[in-house]
Image 1 (cartoon, rainbow, N blue to C red):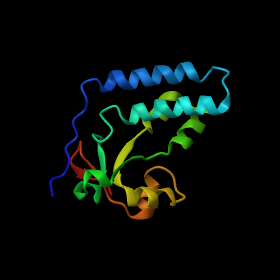
Image 2 (spheres, rainbow, N blue to C red):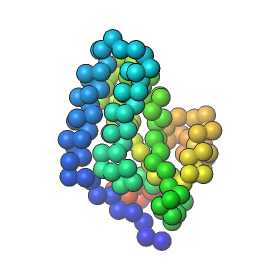
Image 3 (cartoon, rainbow, N blue to C red):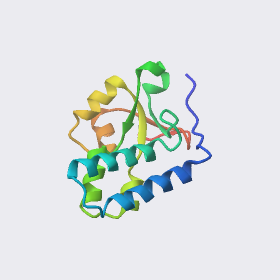
Image 4 (cartoon, helix red, strand yellow):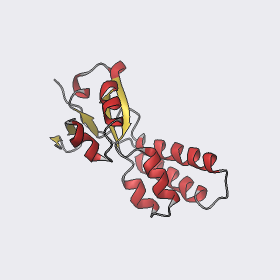
Length: 140
């Protein structure tokens, strides 16, 4: 098994800055609530895809040896949670720091969705082992 190696996109910082600027512009606007949430959701997607949809730092153990067609870009902290934090006035940078993706299998994605936990605790709760392809270490 060849483990993935993280390689940041050359425009990673610019892409994140762009999405963050958009979030800063959207938050104070008096928009229809569903529209505001959808626009923020797109911005959060752009942050988690700053290196490319499937070129993220974190991978589940099962994903490292699965076919590309069985993989899913998964938000460690679910977007609805991040959006609620933004709408409640939490510092944008703090929320952005939690906009993290992990590549998992489609089966694992379903399991994580049923966990009832939040963030990385969902992975611990479901026993899904995670590899940090930047540091080249297993996280849990």
